[in-house]
Image (cartoon, rainbow, N blue to C red; front, side):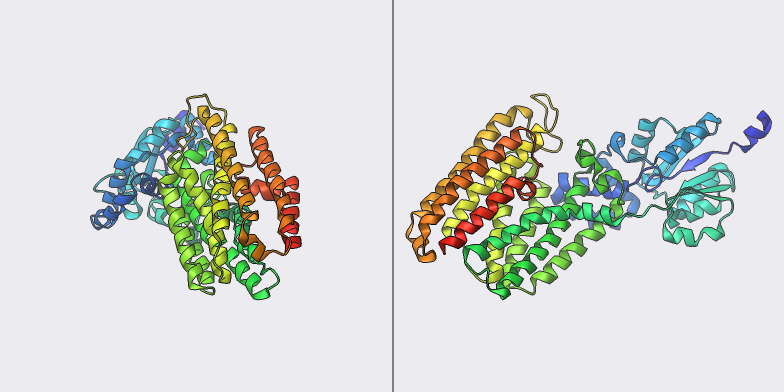
Length: 479
């Protein structure tokens, strides 16, 4: 091809942002970030929306920042942009996202000659985008890369249409387009992606719902076992609902984390736009299951959900208070387990839980901190902790664990234990087991041999499982 014909063919290449250049939705991400940073201001959402979608985007963009450096970019689209610039073509970022976000992405990549985006008065999507493009470049005067049915007006007036992981509705409308190429085949999240996003492994924490079953010696009552099992699943779905919200709000921090950046939302394996649908769906399933149990259990689950939301919205960012919230969430599971089978947890069980789970919560923070290569004055992304806090956390955590063992010893020496067990002297053997487990917990955390969630580590660790079996057998023998 000679230079004259090549120049004639070099029409501008216009590229969409959300779902095309990046494997996420900038509006969903920044709304979640806004909720995390300024939750009380969500009361203004209806007022902003009444004034139009463009105004809503502008108000959100004025109060949040999109971390363009760590977004999940679509490699094939970036390569197409580099190839276009190499051929001397003009490249345009043309998006319905707010201009602030579009310019942040354009400045980071350095691959665009210009940016066309939404502002306070114009929502540059669908027909508005098509009109802006044809007014500037003329009909068939540009090539366009997009991913969704909302891009159809722009596609129909483009010289060439390049599809990126096209949606089902766009694939159905493909026949109405001319000169179409699929730049990136459809990518649908796998079952493994959803399993990872729901964090089914974290459901292991809900084993705590069976503690009341064991403590009340009702583990041979089938109805009680089924009730506790139903509560286990109900808590799991509600916990997954909160995890989805948490991951949406923590996307900027997760993408800078060495392990969390591979999570489905952070990596773009699951579109962020699915998050607002998953949150109420999972919660609805959880509460539907809870409604099959006692009203006390439903109330306990409501409290758990409320506390979890507040933890993720603000408390998790406050040093010390975050560990108290985590300890409370662990203890709430025990209370809910008791409510599911219609028993009242004892003072001793709650006192033990308070200290024991505070130790676990501190171990969680310690392991997160020790596994990061930070300078002494650097903060953990999304947290108020610094590496210099390690010695304080380990001393507080060990002290809380030993206090839990002390509560256990006082319980064994109380009159209540004689009412519940025929051979209470056997329970004394649980104290050295607990001491060994707590010391091992903190030793493994210090050696970086522990998952950042200690309860998951406790279930997965072979020695820890053995201690749990021996502990349970001792309680059964004491009956």
